[in-house]
Image (cartoon, rainbow, N blue to C red; front, side, top):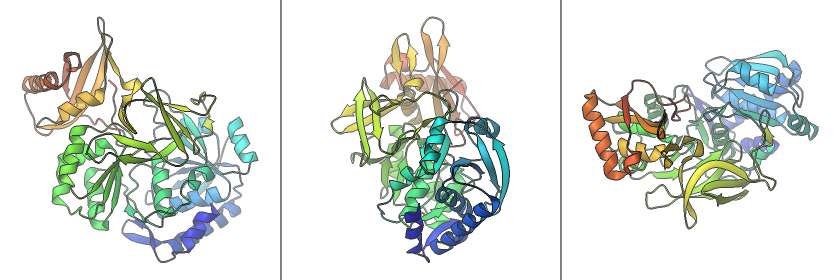
Length: 446
């Protein structure tokens, strides 16, 4: 990690972070990292020890994580909206130290917290003198898995500096995409603009106030942003690029996004905590076809499912068998279509709804419904059925109240006009509940 700190030192006056209206330059960031290195030595934190860090993005939080990596520790970032409860996470990973930041991310309290859990993979990493990173999967298709990475290997992907940009790290600090975003921004001496509140209003206001150039977000967030109309009320003209990933984008949402931001590059991204984030290039025709790969990554499609081999792959799960085959290929469980060098992601195997032996991808039904008037958001799920195995159910959020019978009729007519009859929702439910996790990713369960 020393190479990254050396790069910081080459731009001491350049803005590294904007946090709650205050700017921290790269020279100051180096001082904060060095200060934390002294603190770690004073507290007695040793190389190979597991250190849980409970916080959200803030300059000091990022600097502590870099200081821990520099010291050879195993970092376990946790957020207050974590996908797994703190005690449950640490019972899986183990812990030697617990560091909690105040809500503003300014003050860190170090506490000895010994939870002994032995893992052969961690022992091998420590024996090699390498820093580690433990993240937890969302658990959307089962119990959360603890994922172990070599921190240096993740960072090495960014040794080649790219164009500096001002960006909001939208995905949380306990998410691989969040770590990837921060390393990508800072390794190119860009500016990280933090947001404590990831609501549409707070993010849009932060873009306008701080002249943010890059917004990495989820399709669910972008759907809500377009529905809010805030992109028309606030000055978001600084945006040069919007990236979207972690779930399937609806073509109707992408079309509206292109219309709302005609001068902005829209880029689909693809990555998994297990293999890293691949370089991607969206097809320039405004479709959902994307080319993924890049240096350090190989891809192949087997039985319509995407497989990836990565130089930046995890070392393994701490509480589950590996999903890599003997040759190092990882089954992503994402079904895709292939057209030349491009793929179109249809959805996770676990999300497929089986109606009488016919496959239904929730995203294709959601795409049709999102194109209708008065629809704020929709989540399509499968419900058990005695004769068909499953039926399609659409949970819908409305912009303004509408008679349920009228809504159901509109949705069924639109779906039957665009899709096979078995894909049309057998049930339509009007819901006031959020369809999204704290990470702004769609929840598809009953």
